[in-house]
Image (cartoon, rainbow, N blue to C red; front, side, top):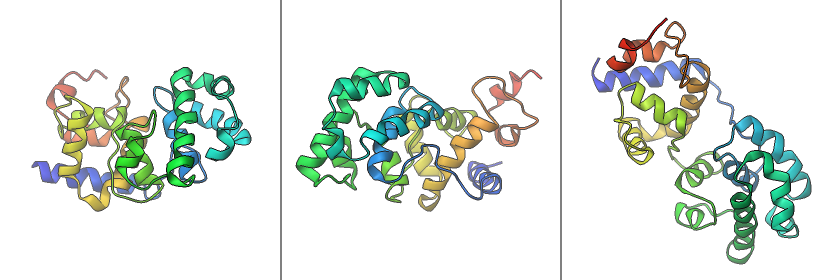
Amino acid sequence: MTKQERVTFVINTLKELYPSIPIPLDHKDPYTLLIAVLLSAQCTDVRVNQITPLLFAKADNPYDMIKMSVEEIKEIIRPCGLSPMKSKGIYGLSQILIEKHNGEVPQNFEDLEALPAVGHKTASVVMSQAFGVPAFPVDTHIHRLMYRWNLSNGKNVIQTEKDAKRLFPEECWNDLHLQMIWYGREYSPARGMDLEKDIITRTIGRKTNLDGYKK
């Protein structure tokens, strides 16, 4: 298969497997999504979805969030890990949203990435899932699959994002990054690869992956 044929195969297979795509993090608006994505750093989405209802019951908007102390936020989000940094980030970005953005989450990368504890991946998720702006946030699943499918060299997530944006049509990005996350979880995990189930890797996988596969 040519690279273009492999790209088409990935798009069509994922579309077939995931015609409707659930968003992994529970949220009700851009602010709650932003907080959930921030909490998901080095934490599972399942754990985040257990903790955010406790946090959002007390504060689901920046005005209520800054009524709490950093310490109170930290206690609630502790199970998500990195709670000292994340609690300061949540409090700090809530203040900035009120002071600079009328309490609203900005709809551009520059302002989002200027917020405390918000990096490019978090901004990309918010732009894509909250505002429908084409973006391709690369998490560990996408980084692994792009390498495994010989669509990127796997050097770093920045390169993987560039390769994904270059290879896949822009109108597919917002669906595709979610479809790849679900596929990585369900069919192509980091360990315990099962090529009986993992049709994409079986069909277009990097030779070293296939050679090293043990049933």
